[in-house]
Length: 416
Image 1 (cartoon, one colour):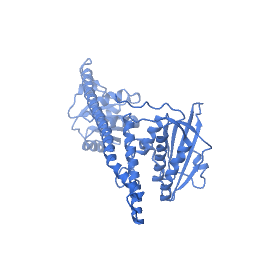
Image 2: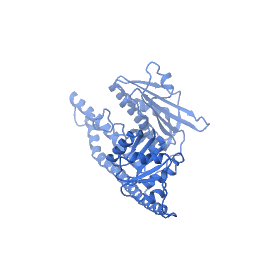
Image 3: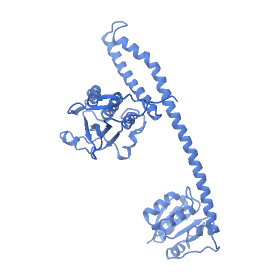
Image 4: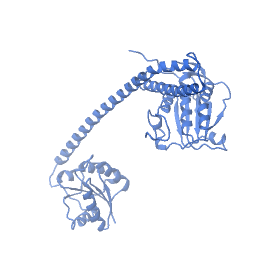
């Protein structure tokens, strides 16, 4: 039994050829386009390829040239089959035979068997004119494809620019009316506008919590927009990395209590002097904690560790902030994507978890500005999560924020 690959975009033709050749004892593989056919030919190593000359993306001539240029397929017979095509050109680009449509189902198996047995048709013309014509047409097609790609790239660049402007404008437009709301809430909670009843205070505290969360989202939108346009200013100074980690952990504790999540902290051995923008570093840490808490089920566990270490190759010291959780984990295919702006594994409006996909993107950009990176492990491979928490192993996700101790931060943006 021979394995035959049939490249044809018409489903009816594929079905007919499959039935005829299968009845003759052959195994038939199908591909609906030229690119798919080339990929399948490389992986399946067929004994013969039947290709329609008029197929999407790569046409039959281009498929034949591509297969003939692949060492493992150079000797595989190729039979062109079409209702509209040039026999001389198909033979010139590497086909071994040419069969016109519609096929004769009675003689078709015998025709294919002849090519399997080594039969080759020869072009009736001499010289390389058919090959030159095919090459010219292929180059022309590629030229048009390149032009289309250039236009598509220009459109994508414009969309990206408009997105950045939209984010910047939206953030400013939203933050402007928030300013008086925050001010009046503070006056009311401080009872500077009159005494409050217990119920009024409870309602205002709830509103204040929502406003604070909303302001945090606006700040992140502004920062991500500024980072994408290279206009985020980092205010560099000396600070204590361990102290910033403690502040971020303390700020996260109310959310841990609300969700009944157990927190394990591996305490720092002492002060960790560093240089950079402590506010943005702390906010990056907070985003990592928020993300872990969000995906950890009620009653689950989150573990945090802030350390410093020297590179294995003797390079400069690295600051490390790690957060591990007992959540559902992140598929390997999404582990790089979740560090992109707005990406979420579940982007539906009815998803189980909240958020808009900015926190990890912000953390990654802060890390890169400080000469570092953000890494994802799911499930965690770091032995720390098992050694420190043997009773409650963390099998969800570990997010690691790495920074240089004394990075060269980006220069402040200019208006020029």
